[in-house]
Amino acid sequence: MKLLFFCLVGATFLCGAYVQQIRGHVGISAVSTMLPKALNQFRVLLIDIASCAFCAFFAWKSWALFHEAWVDGQVTSSSWAPPLWIPYIMMSIGMTLLAFQILLQAFGDVVNPGKGE
Image (cartoon, rainbow, N blue to C red; front, side):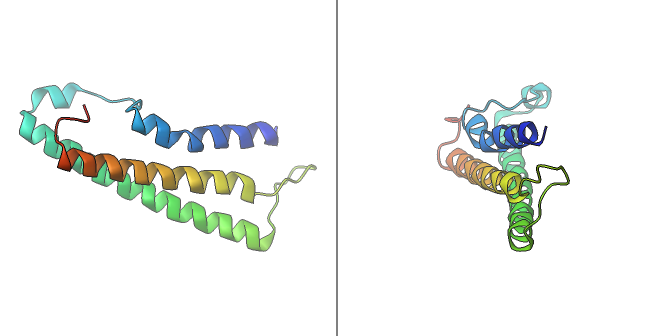
């Protein structure tokens, strides 16, 4: 069961940056259709900055969890007892890549407005 959990963590976090790159995340367009284009571009930039800040914080905390699990030699509570640093490193790498991807897209939207849609 733990192996399945580790695989799910890896698939979820390590694919997040790619899904963001193709803008595959669920988006709600009700607000964006009601706003003028200039205001909507500002809204998108604000959301990208907030998302990047959240992902950067999550990545920072994930790296702290990874370090703690690595140094203390933490393992799961199952009889197999795999090390906890395995899912934590996948979370850390995935969230770091996602934060960088969002930052790149936000910067790209500022330099080339209208191209990322």
